[in-house]
Structures are given as C-alpha cells and as structure tokens.
Length: 255
Image (cartoon, rainbow, N blue to C red; front, side, top):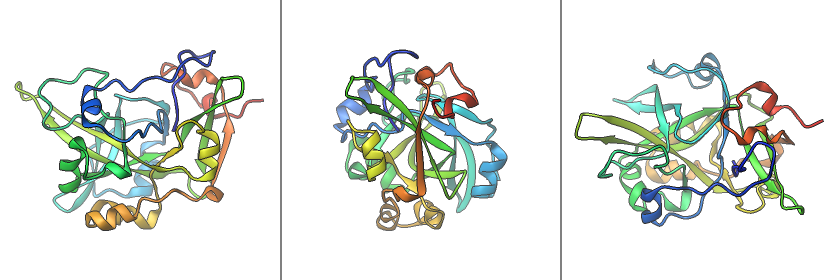
C-alpha cells in the first residue's frame, strides 16, 4: 500500500519502519499498505456478517499505523468483530510498546518462520481487516512519490488477510494487535509501487472461511496476488501523506 511522504506537499523520504521487535526478527521486507480506507461499520458487517460485534468505528479515508482498526477473527468457533491496534506487538515483548513499535506488515514468506509470527501462525491467530481501498506511492523519474488510490471493481468492501497477537503487561494492560500480510504484487500494483513490489493479501470472498478456519496450509493457499483486471487505480493528492488529513477528497482523482 505504499510509502509515506515527509510532508503533505513534497515528495520527501520513505518513512522508516521503526520497530525494535521487527528489526531483531529479521523479517522479509514487506512495506506495502502504509495507508488504507476504512468502510462504514454497517457496510463491513454486511460484507462479513460476524456472529458477534464488539467493535465500534466510523469510515476513515486515511488509516495509519498504530491506530485501532476493526478486525474479524474467530473466538470459540464463532466469528467476531473487534478493534485491534495496527502494528503487531508479540506476546513475548518485555516492555510496554511505544507508538513507533510494532510490525506493520508480514510477508507471506515469513508466516510460521519469523520470531514474531511463528506463535500467532501456529496458533491460527488469523484475522481479516475490512477495507474499501488502499494507497500506493509511485517513484517518478523526477524522484517524486506520487500517491495513488486503489480499489476493487467487483466489491466496495473487501478483506485483507492479517495475523494478530495479544500482549499482557505487569499492570494487567492488554494490547491486541495485528499486522497486514503482503504478497508479491500483481502487474498493476508493481507498476505503481515500483520500489517495493508488494501488495496486501486481498482475500476473495470464497477464501474468507479458509483464512479464518482452515489449516495453515489451506490458509496460506488463500493468499494470492489479487487479479489486476479486478482493480482500478488513479493518482490522488499528496494530502494523504499526513494522517491529520482524513476526508473524502483524499480518494478523488487529480484533475
């Protein structure tokens, strides 16, 4: 999903992933989906039909790392909608996390292999993040990072594969957090996100159950680059580079 410019009106640098958890885990580079668009709660519930809804959220046009986001997961065999922090904090972390801590992304190649992801993967701690679109940044010949908004043609609301974990501190503080799974980009996304060719693991409707309830082998098989012919992309304003900007104009095409 892209790269974060340093300001709302200049190309800036790629924002680093600053997480001591991620750095020592040695994960595969998987920065994609720095920002995404969140649908309304009623639209998400119509798409995923969770058995229990503990979440409460409103549409957002600029979801950013460390914010709490809605997620669908299983509990006692039933699906439930909950809120989780975006940025995975492993259960074994020794100290309370800061706003910069946590793994934003998990490459499919690292599921079950990395220190951070092995426990959640083996324990089937998989979830689905509702989305209405996401952003990607293209490095132009002028070294400017042009943001693009990307959506699906066939669905207004879709699910992104993610894994989650639960961290508990000494003061009974509990943080449930998640990280977005990424896969190799399809040609459309690779042409836009041309410095790190990854894309979020967008799930087909038929694969929701496999991702949540299937064996690790079946779940991983559900993660495929989404077909480019079912996606649309257009350039948008660099206002999206700043999280404080959050309105419908962010996804409008540049005139």
